[in-house]
Image (cartoon, one colour):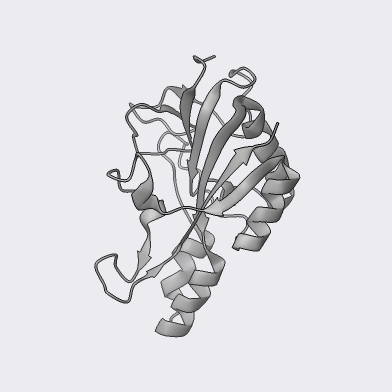
Length: 188
């Protein structure tokens, strides 16, 4: 349970966002609830005004995604915002064609990671998204007002995370932004 209007940071890993309730399976000091983010049954209906999940949804199978998003929607208040960031398949294709290097896109595409406190268990990305696909899934889960957002315009822009991922580098004038950043509103 949390107070009405809470902000949740789901699948936060090592990234701590001040003012957010941190939820992750990993064992970091700042984690408020160490649990799988697909099950938020310890949170009541309509408690959160904002849910942020940065490079988390791709760890679920595409067939699981709608149910996961419906659970997150349940916790959001009507009109609450779901802010997602996932690897952008269209951008990764641009990186591949620009670089000619398959290794340049393997990390964002397959996402091999060993979370802290996970007993050394390796997890991988299980799907990839384009804006049209993510929009379809969000609509099926009961979200509206689906749009891209600029990470620079968020209240947590000063905290570096994967929503700010660029290839080859953010400071490169011709860099390709490889994170698909999408916001959606919980429909009534």
